[in-house]
Image (cartoon, rainbow, N blue to C red; front, side, top):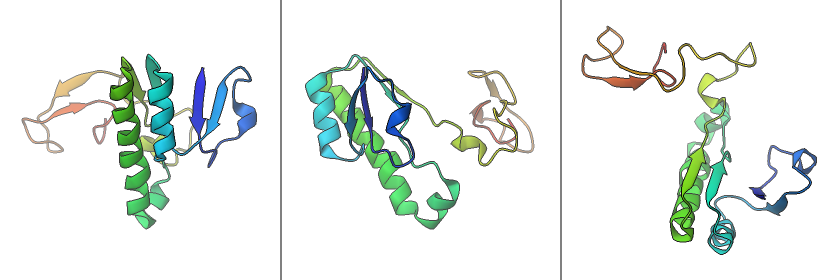
Length: 133
């Protein structure tokens, strides 16, 4: 197992001791080169700037980490022939929840065609991302 993390919010002691660890930012070209060199079959991408208050105060930084960093990994994954890139938003969708773990309002993966005052009649929305769920 290969782990890439800049440790901006995590701690090295939380890592699996058997993992090969590289302290890199996902925006760093070295992270992309590592993926190209290692050629992983799957990538589980959880690196993100997830603070809502910081995203409002520093939108360019937020986009740089979340969009450009993810793009850096995705392009490297294509070059490496990776078959799966799993990306998770984690709990950022829920904001600062009072109850943890935060329950979803509907089962994951369930989509519906909506026709309500909240949505136009032709909107298809995912239960996990739709306002009001």
